[in-house]
Image (cartoon, rainbow, N blue to C red; front, side, top):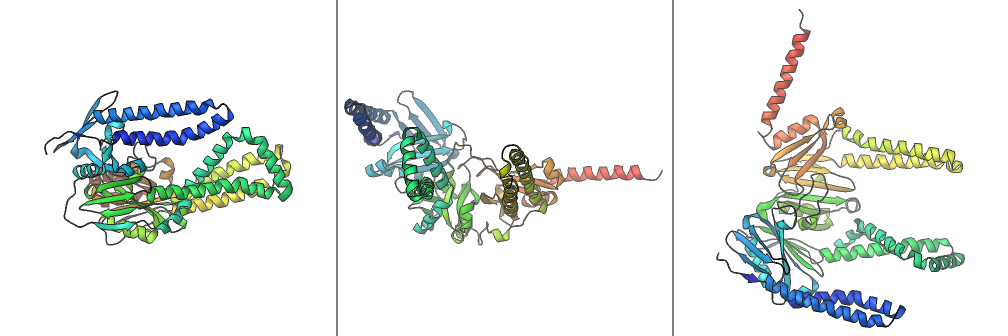
Length: 512
């Protein structure tokens, strides 16, 4: 492929100017009205001048960005030169490119433009990614096809498509809680200025109808905002979602206002993950993620590093469990769902005992702290001590049992399947040939109960799949069976050490 220098779309100036004008109007009009009516009418003029200068600067920046951004694609390289004030030249080896995402915000969709984000095998900093924005939609599709080659002649197959009924799972996630708490935080910023008016309103309503209506308004309105907000967020992210397989690649298209397309080559797919937050799990639903090279970099037991967006790995949003199992099987070309919970092997009772220890510590702390407070400060409230202890013990026991019953694993001809978690339970089905090593950890508390944590190291997903609190003997046997021969040298050394210790013991107790 010969190298040909290309540029951004000539509509870059218009796109950046229109985007700047949108935000200027969104922020400037309320500001001008508020300050112009409350302070001085001169704010109308000053706000108009500031808006004009901002939009003019955006137009100049868009033109300079178009003139100073070039890129080229060769047989083995992708070259990018960009920078308005600081010139920067970068070159990526094409075999290191792991993801090419297409996005189009509302302004870009109106103008027929799109943005292309290129991610490489580098996992840190801006050196591992590049963004070309805006390109024409045709050029974005062509660049996407060039950098993510597809193999095979199979026709395009739709594996799943978003159904409006799936919107019912939006309020069952953590999004409503986050939005509700955000509503209280915003209200707290204005509490000082409107505190007196608000208190007069509250007491007036309470004198008329009672405090129940005031409490209902204070709690109900933020909760309603959180629920409605969760529907809007979910619709923006997943409306028009479609999962397709096209010539050796999985393609996910989604978005209501901002349209996004993510392609995952099949040869980089290493398995699937089924995620079940507690509320969604109780409703009989789950989500399907891809375990693929280059999509995210996370700790094997959770914790996103924040440098890659985890939603690039989502293949299917929250959907009914039968749909989830079918999609998981189709993605990995399995006859039966690899993440079927009925086929998992549970973990020893010692894992349940481990989960009771934090409950015991919390219960002991409650009894000591509340007992002292009730004895010294609030003797009339001593009944809260045993009642709270009973509640904490019941909740802790149910939580510990759920966390224990959520543990499970299975090994079949194709996949190693692991499951853990309670508030957010996840089941990983990892291809056996994707396991490149093992990490075995055993704390002093696990050692007392003959447990260990086994992590199958891989280059996909979080970097590993953890089998938490499995029996010591079962864990070693599982690792040896999953990767025959990989642990054999270590097992032979261990058996040799045990044999020598047995010989020493036999010699020491032998009659003289």
